[in-house]
Length: 189
Image (cartoon, rainbow, N blue to C red; front, side):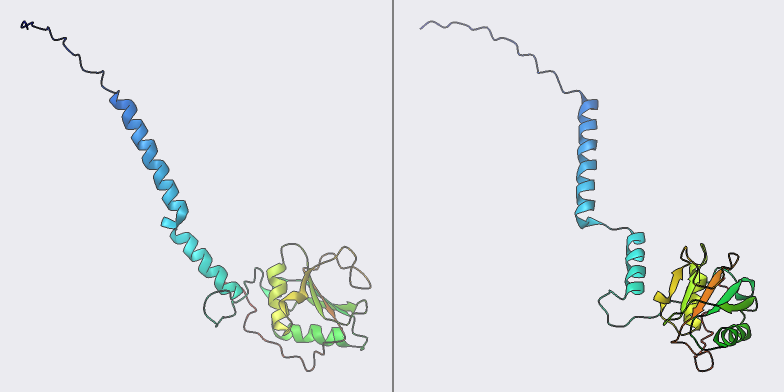
């Protein structure tokens, strides 16, 4: 065999990848992986932990069995609220007696009127006074569900449109024997 010399073809290296394009692809891949890990539970923010803790405290749905009552934030000082007390109890003088008791604990801008008959005492609030109504229900030793928005049809014999709060004294409430709790009433700072 003859020794033939083969000429080698010179190989030119393949064109290198565009390094800028490769860098962008790597950055995008890293961001996608980071997002996937974060959403899979790899990280929660401190705000989420704080919100969960506050929500668990408010609803009592944490792993512990103890809960604490949160104070109600009052947006308006009691003396600045116009409160109308309506007697729906069927017992003469209950609205007046309730208004007088409220005056001794800071609700000095009160008046009493006749209300429509009601078996239950309810604190109705005008828009923006829901926190004030909650504070008043607690003061009267009522449950929080007794604070309700003022309905379109007034619970009183005559409407008092300027009232921030309307207390309809029902047959279940006697101001002479009801414990008035003053710990949650007052402006918060």
